[in-house]
Image 1 (cartoon, helix red, strand yellow):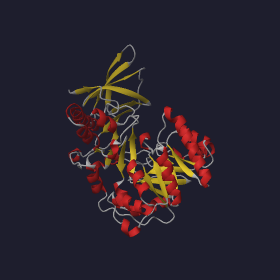
Image 2 (cartoon, rainbow, N blue to C red; image 1 turned 90 degrees about the horizontal axis):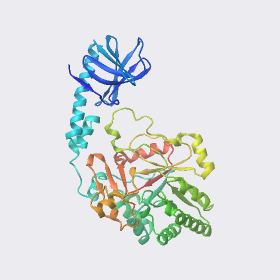
Image 3 (cartoon, one colour; image 1 turned 30 degrees about the vertical axis):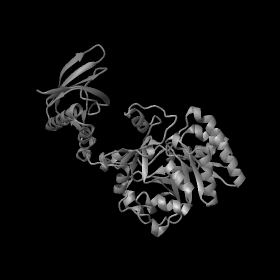
Image 4 (tube, one colour; image 1 turned 90 degrees about the vertical axis):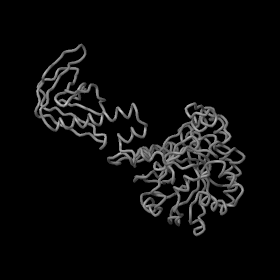
Length: 437
């Protein structure tokens, strides 16, 4: 009689009446379980077998069984139960097959082969890579077109790195927008001449990609002359940056007061939120994507089962939105289009597309690769020549993801190919589109 000991609890769960028990050994004829106290005449025994191919538990309720042995140990009581029913035998046999493949993949296989066993991941496609980020974007955006902006929705473009800061400084807004679309391989810019209503200036993820102070105010000055609204985007703030950030915000507030205008400040940590509140009445805080705890992962489509609840976040709670408004004056929330339906709360909602962030590290893996030759040797970079202007991490094409600066991003490929879906986002509560390329 073949038996397997200590199968992980996540793969094999046992229940005796209302008690959850640990199954320590199982075969097609019997199983052993242990509990802290003795079990007296159980009415129901159920065993949950996790089906790796279906990503769900299959439960077998025992109807024909016999308690063979009971052992009193120092800390627990162990029972051996003989089972006489065919559905139990079939469930154990299937578990053994899957578990054997699981162990073999853990010992001998690649991460892709492991994922193929667990959630039907297409490991055979992992060798299909683009040769460069330019080639990758050409594949992604092939056939993509700019559509006329949905009436009533504000359009914003993200300036999140030196390439865009410099391009905007050198060109009027019409020429900049044309280059912005054209250099990313987006067709249709000649037809629609799409000019943004607003510019997002700064980077939400890397503190070294925020423009220098002189350049920042030059960009702001140019934007106000060209009648373009401004949102300044700040990443997470380190302790050593608190004083510097506070001074900069006061300068921005003074700049706004002289020009009788207001500027949005997109915040991604609570310390920055408090600084904005203290720094002047001309600054309007917005809740950034790092504080909006969405569930976003390009691997979701390889996991079977319901995506119910994934499109919601803590912003669905009325009391939380009231807290944000009353405490910090936050009434606008930033979202990312991430490939599945989302539920947007009442209020002002901005949607970032076509990329969505999944991981961010302040100890930049790209910087570590360029300076140490190994992404694992990470440290907080104090200065950086801008490796991310030239390099990016490329992943298998089917994943639709890339590593840019200190973060990983997925691409909402469905929205790229079907921009008419933007109308549905407007009906769901989005009043601003933020394009980041």
